[in-house]
Length: 500
Image 1 (cartoon, rainbow, N blue to C red):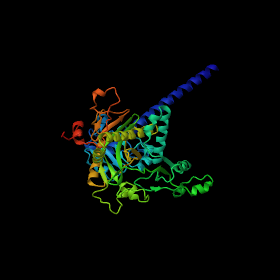
Image 2: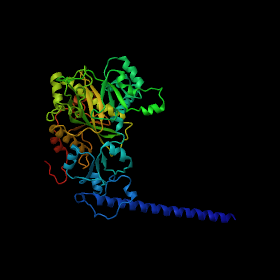
Image 3: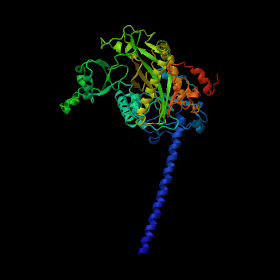
């Protein structure tokens, strides 16, 4: 009897092993078939197959739900070969959800071909709405790039930006000390409403008569912003614990931030202005950030005064607001290029004071990125072009107002259009879909590498200062942007082009 049971157990174990081998073999065959189908589909759908190297004949196979997934256009194809994966691509299929300067730049780039609707793409310049709806359902191959990080809003929503900066400053004070934490004192006193209404009221009462500014946390272009000096003006955001849940739901208000208004802004010809500065992040782990040399100052059209806090043309510098002013001149606009502003400030205050100002702005860019470094979901497929809004006060102290995930690329003048074209062209140069860079560059066109898992210093640093703290940061905001000359030295020509 024992021998029969032993025989049956042995037989059963043998059958299990046989069934498992059969299942694994079938699974491998299915996987290989799916990969083959998806590769052939990509070859079929590539609109520029004749410009890609080593492209095999297209197939008539139709995609299955398993190979296509929830979002089409997410996969890179096999049509450009393994060499192009390693060395760059001569055919780049792009998708663009915006109809402004970026579309012009992408269309003019050699070897780049636009795909429509469900076409598969290698590069996607999308808006944040598309990202929110599609990113989590997308599979992207190694070479694919997209222009937002998944949770970019940690830095670009006004309330979350302040929350992360406050936490970062608190951690610095705990771990290093007050001196280090004080380097984060570059954003105005800010409260999220209605959640921090009572905290705000305590601060408000400490300085009666001061001016505050209310901003919706998720809007841009000056929408919904107003100034106030009395609590009765923001009663809608009062957090009242005595109300019932039904009353709270009925009286739900949009989330805002209440921020102490900078009452002593730096004025030029009596007018207030702020700065738009561009920072490109290609990685958060490790942190790698580039600062663009160009930018601009945006001026209000009305002379500044605190006697009237209801005049939006006086207090808001957004172009979307200013261009609705009765005396707005579309040819002149309301902007100075960053180089013009730097020359003006240097002539008026001296080089040393202006250098200090721009160094303090560098500190804002790096510290703000570090404040979200641990919460941003890093993804090698993602990059982000941020638009920083900086305000100067009368003491030439820079204040961080907000950071934009989708800075406007719609031009307000021909000069503005040309500047934004340069910015976007150089953004594509840094992202480098064509594989023309080594990865060790400190400068690409108008971009200077300011942080690469640590501070980056200029090539021309004086060797006598080696070992001291006198190194000069590799930033040139507002300096000469001789990008074309630098790019000719740096980059290999596009396929089919001769070096200039």
